[in-house]
Image (tube, rainbow, N blue to C red):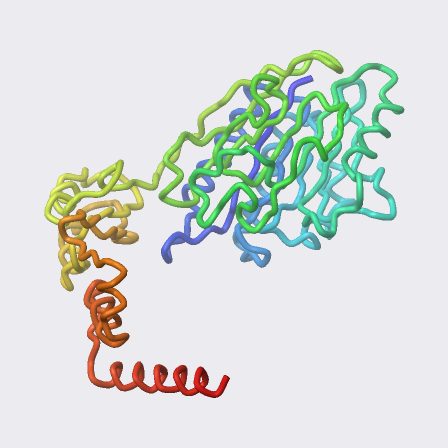
Length: 388
């Protein structure tokens, strides 16, 4: 059995005011070409089809046309699409029955009444357990394991078993996701593999944008990653995964296929930060004929020059690239620049002097109005302390 595993297309994504349909169409054309070449039995799209729950009609049309082209590239292939946390579950369900005539299965929400609807048997090929995004709080107890147990009963011919989900798994590398930690990534709480159950040959995951195995060295649990960068911190290759599984309980063989981007997200400099003068030179030397979205990473001591954007826009004239953002990072202070105080010295300082020094350190103007507000608050605190 051969599976094409993809996720997180984020169609309709707007990057700093720029719509990205041109490069998204280019990505979808590559999907069609890969299907023509690799002839998978199953095309599995594990959530976040759209970037927003209310995509425009143009974006929905782009998606519909792409699915038709993918189907035509290999008409006997089964296409399975599940909703992610960015998607509207309802939109995935509206045309569920008509889609089946083209071997397309769409699953928008968890079916608590008839959980067996999540089991899709691909005749003489595989069983796929397709689970859309559902928060951990709303997920029925033992949902994955009960479906795996059911498939074990049905699987008389020892066919490969594929489980899919759109979630965060403990131990994943969430590079590129903002405000993420081991417990929660992109608003989705992490789940441990021990809570999933056993009996799958391949666990196809969506949500995390970096392609990776989560269970090395077993290599059965995988994020395929997004095929197109969504933000400038995704400084890694973007791929789809071709997965071959000979039979139930056999080891999956995975091939990564890189997706080309005709308008990539480019950092200047490519790693770390540089001074404004150095970054301007990098921008000036950026090829005029190269399409790209550009973020400038500038290290500053105090503030970015007020005319920085104007200077950058002048340097962008005649270039095909688009300037998105100037990303600044304050230069780290050395210990020589930091004022230290002993506990006795700190105790001897008046509260307003400490506040004034703190404001100076943060480069905030501590004017008369702020001093008056500070003194009013301090008087109120002291009054409440006397009354206790």
